[in-house]
Length: 171
Length: 292
Image 1 (cartoon, each protein chain N blue to C red):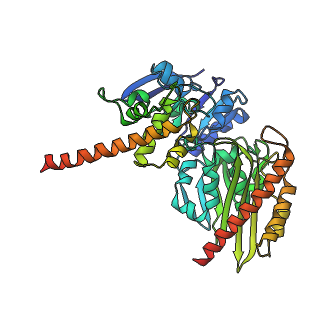
Image 2 (cartoon, rainbow over the protein chains, first blue to last red):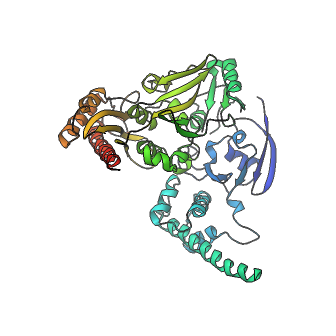
């Protein structure tokens, strides 16, 4: 079996390895990069627990080959927190009780983050459409929707707070 | 689940990709978005020894209107189709089919070409392409071949592509100002295959149906064109009675089997109902186009 040399950046850190073409991206993330926040749920492209951002695009990493992601920039749940500060989406899930067992949460949070980047103030219907490829068996989704909307508001507020300050600093 | 071992290449040109397919013959498989192929590998329902990934082949990921057709590269993603204002405005049925493929995350990778070349009768685009009377372009060692969609779809998981040919483009005839299209799917939940789905395209001329295209999803060994229903519509006003009769003819053309998505008779009933809805929707859109 020929192995292929791949270089994948995960949460800003470069990982280089020789991999078999059949190695799934989720296995690379969990077993080569040792980042086990990305979960394997159904393993059949249904549940979305393995969702990560690849070059800014949401993908189910159980249905991507590592060789397809060669050269890519990946963000996993571990990359949400910055300098000890929770990302607003993480804060939202905490404040709004957006998780119970937590298994689907890494995927849900990345989907929420990606949604809010395109649409900072989504309606309930828009959130539900965005998370329709992610299964949660505990919450009934109500609080997940609230958590994502909470994060949207939080991100807008902090953007508003920053703007006048930046103007002041420049002035 | 871990796929069986295989070799992999991501060639940078179409000719290189074709040479690889020639070299490996029917043992090779083309990898597009991978959202059907990788699950098949993981379940070990397919075990090609060589994968040719098209992701680096230039020119397959764009679409444009030219020479009377919407020309869509085979690697154009479902999400790209969903978000295109041009396609939404002029080829609504195509957008509606893309919107119900699997789920939003899968659609970031899944491609139109992959959906067609996989030739799963449960896939949504084959019947939409039947209704549009589309054709596809295939490139192989002997050059380029134009294949009408009816000839392309041979049987369950079987197309008329030769092992060393690659599907490069999908050509959909441009609509007239009085063409409308629709795709309506009944599914148990997001991400599931259709219980049944119906694609419809109608072109009107002064209120009379000039051309009609229909396609039925997941009610037979391949996507079905209900020819009698199409022929019945041509030359008529698309009133309730005409549409009801066409829907009856479409249901008669369906070949559903009983399975976990329901008994055959039920599915035939679903085809009748969805055909009527899709025709009403397409006709309404065709009329709206005419009023502009």
